[in-house]
Length: 557
Image (cartoon, rainbow, N blue to C red; front, side, top):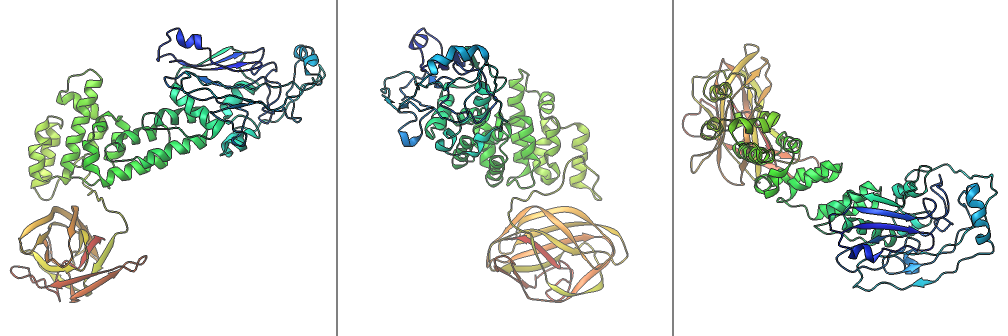
């Protein structure tokens, strides 16, 4: 289908013969100007405020479509019954006459004498019509002296400040790009302007919005309409498109919309897409459109700290994307090619957050990692002190809000020893929370490194709900030092859990004058989270409610 805009001196219409001549849907859009100047019988004007009803000729649009459509009238506002259903002739403005050249002055002076225009309406087309027509008869103003040219200081894109058709028509058409194209100092004199990258349906939606304030967008046309609105500087229509996308944002289209939001420079939409992916990471990665994203979009997601999925699943999703990208580049999906497709994205997979079993069963056997990387990661999982690895070991946290913590001791003393036995304390809470780590005491002998294993165990089932083999460095002070879990551990109300820490290192500080109940109150909402601590039977290295290690619990509500 061919999308065209024809400009004539007296009227505007789309030639049915061209549509009937067998032009395919792949033909580009075009603008056709059958006039002596850019807009009728007047030469280009530098003014963005020139009267829309001056003697530049009538402006209209004809968009060939597969379904019927009404007439579009660029000169009539909603109060005149204009827009897509009718065309109304306009009385020319007495202000801001367009400038004329010497050649045009003589040609128009006779026709312009004692000439006025009166409103008259044209009938709307039937639904069987295959084109949209808009026409307006305009009269010429008295000609200026042959030697006088009127220039006005242009105000670029004033249309962007006008949100309704009435406001836009009070000055000129609703697009700064069209205004410059037809009325500016560098306006075209061509009789036909190709618009090769504009879909006819999107162009029609643009015209309907400009000339009738009608918003006509749907799932199949919203992206092309957004592109067209941006191309022709119509921010009000852009906003409608973005709002439509926001309302229809789901996990199964979040990656596709994120790609488009980045392409069209829509940061607010991109932020909403990322938030949706954070909350529904597994579903978003499983969606069909995930493997179609570009590498930069993939990396923008993988680098986030707030993804709610295990790292081994992120690795699997990245491999699927690499396979699809290799096929797009007509390459065999070999491990070497998949590594090449991923490029720097492989460094954003946080392999140290996997369990050794997950790593051994998946990434270690994939062929994507080098032998040196595999050995380094296995050493990280199995030996202490842990060697440096090239991959991020910072936990991801899919939680929102502010981090909270409670301290159960009111005083700190010296010399708490370690012999391989775990420090343990039992606790429960009054509301659902997510524990992300503990604060532990460090050495009394100055700066020291500790190796530590932390766990949260469900008391009744003795199930380990979360654990991490890691380490921390202390500075010799009586402060607490953060040790974090790989993933947040969900803690349910009125259920007993055991906090466990097994340290390897020199004697440390320890807490005394412990409290059985500790309450945290959120400053903003006043919500209270109450911890109750109890003695954990069995080997606990002496830690109890009154004395010992694990002074601090770090959590989100």
